Image (cartoon, rainbow over all chains, first blue to last red; front, side):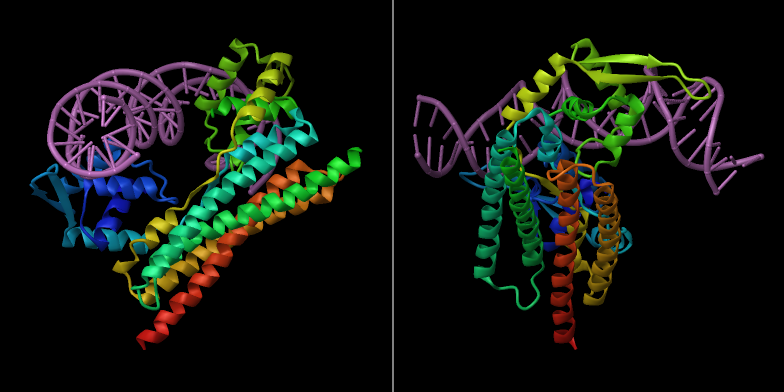
Length: 182
Length: 182
DNA sequence: TCATCCATGTAAAAAGTTACATGATTTT
DNA sequence: AAAATCATGTAACTTTTTACATGGATGA
């Protein structure tokens, strides 16, 4: 899968500028692309070449000129085919902290505990920002009964919640070892 | 963080060949590296240059010659410093399926439901292999009260469990919309 | 005034993947 | 007889990241 489909997906909901798309991709917690300039502007160029997008240059006073991209009917068709036929891949959990923990034999029990507590704090901070985003989204509440964006936001919240629960379970195990050592 | 630290970490537990390391990295669900030849053999060369590792060539009959790598005292020191001072980064959840779902406006409710069910099945399969690995590890049970490997395996299991719970919640929401449409 | 945001794009460097190359052993 | 596993390494290609380049508006 390439970033091109993600861009088509975003533009299937509303029209956006390259800069807007870049931010959306960068801020998304689940997209596997960084959303750097090179990536986004190149992809947009290619999608326009393939006639899956069209753009309109908007000149504005007191603000920089921008290009707004819109999906074409051909783009919608390609997107639909992709969504339907792409087999849903299982998530990848990249957790550098677990790589760190795998080297824990170099540390004392107290050092491991401190490390785990710092990790818990970092994850908790992330969880809270995601909960806040979801809360704000639900407060707007204009989406009716079925709200896909809410579902996507909830996915993030649940992932971080599960991680917090694991750290709590891990801290109990670590304290168990600390007592054993006394 | 680079793959070099992961290799040092693995070698801090036991000595391994390049081929073994490659497999460990490839099979790890949380390491952010693919573990391809180029990556692993280059990293090993560099770590040896820096005197963080040493290797011994093992000639064997009826089997290919292999190089076994061992961590040095300097290597252990570098590893310990890294584990202690590296600030524990929050995990990244790369979920291509959510990118797909974000384009769901192109689909009917029935198509979304079918897509979500396929995803649930794929995640469930993954969950079961991880549960199986954990079960086998616990059956060996030679690690005493505190078992770091079990903790790492549990982390994976919990991540997939959380994902399954989310799909169940999502399927209820989708069915809600389906009934609304009737 | 200095930093950040908006807005577009390109060039160079780094990292990663895929394929190539070799060859014995074990499994299907 | 073919495919997979073990085992090492390199070359070519692709992708990604970082930095460069420009310039007005906004905010601390």
